[in-house]
Length: 126
Length: 376
Image 1 (tube, each protein chain N blue to C red):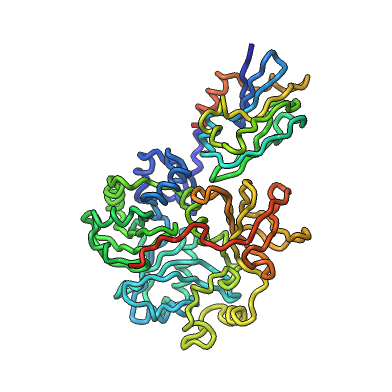
Image 2 (image 1 turned 30 degrees about the vertical axis):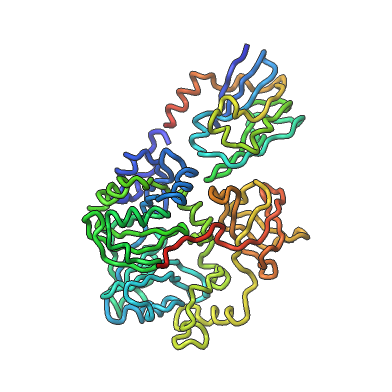
């Protein structure tokens, strides 16, 4: 069973069985950034901390951090993204995922928004 | 964002309502609410301009007329540029300099027959007007055209677009201008722009600006383009952005803008000097400068942006990036910046620090894309 949670910085994490997660950015985020032209991913095995930089995303206009939505260790990265960052724009919640991780015990998952709360949050920004 | 109106003190151009109607994302820029992009996005807007034609609202820029018999001679006391030799209907790039030889602003000047027509940067226009009023206001009349809009149409399709709605533009070549009707509206049209493409800049009465923009947007080649793509287009074209690539701390010689200083105003020329900072610039023309603006081609995919430090192979800081990003037509990162002169030769290998990591860059010639101006 999977649950999806969102950050105020517009990252998402989809968690399977409370143990492993897949991380990406939301549709709102990709729309705000515009077409991505460059992506830097964390290294497999790296420990990432909730709210701190785990990668880099750049559009024509600007460079931004990809912050990890939860604390954990990276098990896999989306190797196809650096050659095709536009995937994030095309399918931000699917093919455009950034990395997978094993959640730490204190992953911080509970502090994130569920789908409904995030949708309300974004509505206020628009 | 949200319900806080951060933009309440910002000015609007005559095309403000049209931008909203077209779905633009508006941002504060130089005291104006300006469209940074439309729903198609920066990438498509950029590529469309290079492929067909883009429409840009540049009404935020300052439009000024300088009247009087001594206008050209007076303006020459403020710029290192040949204004007296500018033939009727010819346009030229010019720079206001300060006493230290730094650049106060860059602008376009056109000999419009009975006056000079000047277009200055939005962020500098108050200061430029004060500068002209103070120094040459007694010799000529400085008239601010606050009630006019300025619309640029740029790209290889713009000639066809304009010939349909303004047949008179067929006779214009790059850097010439004429008073013409465009879609039945009396305008002043220059064949120039800020993208490296063939194109036109159209000065239009403010109350007719929206009608003109709509007439242009009705043409099948034309797409509205925001400030985001305007910046990536000018960067690919190797053109300076004031406040970034040039400012009061950079001289025209350091900025590699010697081409803008005609011989007649250089040492040994018939009207050499006679502008602020002339001694400094003359000395630099003779003895060279310690740093120069160069094009930089990053050798990895990582964009190298404004502010990135440039180091030599030994790791010593030798310069800084002043503009950089992704060039959609180039298909990769491009940049420009200042480096110590000994590192300014083409193909010199350097490194730029991106998020503290050194990335290889090579000094490259600009423009990064070939210019396609119409020279007749």
